[in-house]
Length: 136
Image 1: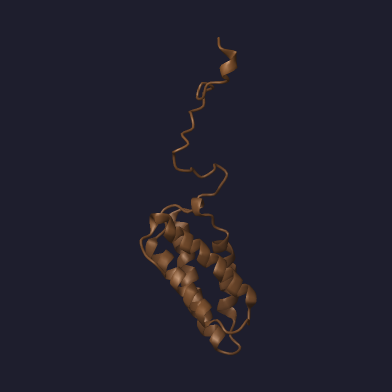
Image 2: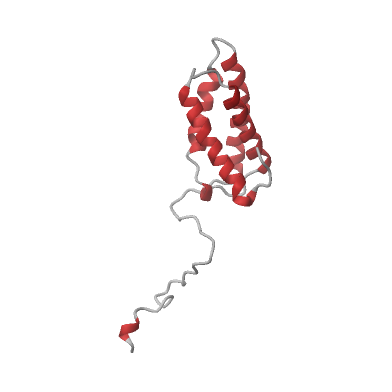
């Protein structure tokens, strides 16, 4: 027995780790399946369009408040948690948020702009990860 060599990889009932293998999501990270992501992205797209109209019309803010809640969830997503997102909904949600940000009046709700930026970064990361071949 050669003790100075150290433990052999893969000999303690665990498979050896390949450093070239793609990163696997941690077992504790929640996995976001296509049904969940599509529903939230569809809601985000619709609310972003409504919020843009509401924010440009004095006195209407209901869609913006609801959108902030959706953006808080979307902004908390990690790229490794998202499994097979609907490419159309990712692009549509990103485009709707981008349109909202471009037309957002001067700071009526600064937290809405911040959350929209964070959500847009998540969506751009999903598109850049190679799973979606489109730009928004």
